[in-house]
Length: 521
Image (tube, rainbow, N blue to C red; front, side, top):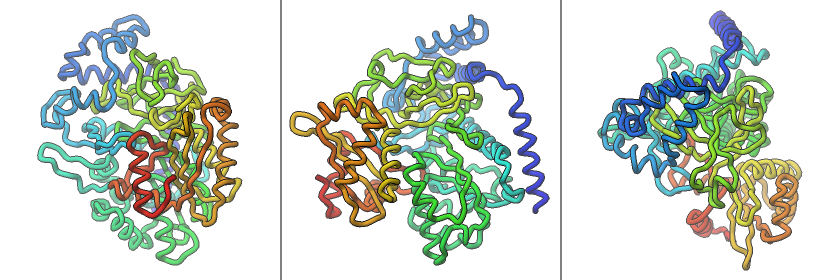
């Protein structure tokens, strides 16, 4: 088996040498990607309505840059509700060739935290193949990590995701994207894949964690993949069940954690208490709409956009000219291609994909940290930020402030959320912070949070002297946040707790806290 690992490592090293040879520019990659998408979908109902033939001709024969100007004036911008009501509902009802050729057999359920209804995101065969291809690239990128033992590549890969027992809706199947992808894992990968087909099909999240825990001692795990909160909960259960000190007592060869979905920083301190030695952390950006980006090298500040595999990206400057105070898109926003962005500025992400999403506002905001490599960090959601009076407080600001304050106070903060509330005739922020410790000084926590946010965000500091009159902090056990998610059927898989509550969700959250005996005020 060591020979197998050696060959894999050499193959990965060779693949990275080939990959590092001169590649086309990001602009050229994206131009080619858009051409392929348009060519594939030009005879669909959507493609015929928006004259994809003409757009394709503009790419192939038009002047440089003219194709993008034509594309953004020809095809409107869509959010989920608009594209579903106008187009995707037809596919869901069984129609063929609506936004992508053929009939859509799989839909990823994305229970958005901003909206009440469950979203149905189409997952075509082309998208499944694209995700698999990018996943393989991510594994190949491990060749850049020189300290990995040769036999690491022979170890099991635990992927903690949704159930592969998908809901059969007669014309299609639906479930978590992670469950859809796990159901279609290539045969050659199955010997490495854990928890295996039987456990992966389990729909009850609590039972799934129990079954994994019981089997854990029989597996030789080298890689773990999943959302930080659920991986941490699983490792805590395993450590408690076997009465050991760290997860390395059960999985001595665990080397790599590929995480995504939310910022890892709020979880890092508690997570690393469960380890005997440091892991290699690889950040990934896998959404229901596609595998968008991943960390490709050690020490990278961001994740590299996947510009040549079925995804065409556009970027809307996230400012008051393009978005209102509730995060809704203004009429005729400015949009840019990947070569037109600026490092350090915040953008809302638009995607056109091989699943039939066209100029689709995914809802995430990103910031470029390396324009040449196309490396980004996720800064939040278009609707998960607070700007009641011009404070422009992003999730990125919130994560950094919580990380700094938890270090100062020695707290283990896994979850938190913030609500914007009225305060007399003006405004305030109400923080709900989950901790592991007891007897936390809420007043000191409030004081430090306020101070760190003022340091991180100049607009916040200004408004704290004017319209944003106060902040309130309610300290809760971390478990309360998971209980709320369970009450909403959002345990496990790709689900994560919203960092900002707005509108009807504020009252829903307060009602839940009252029902559990906590004073939400």
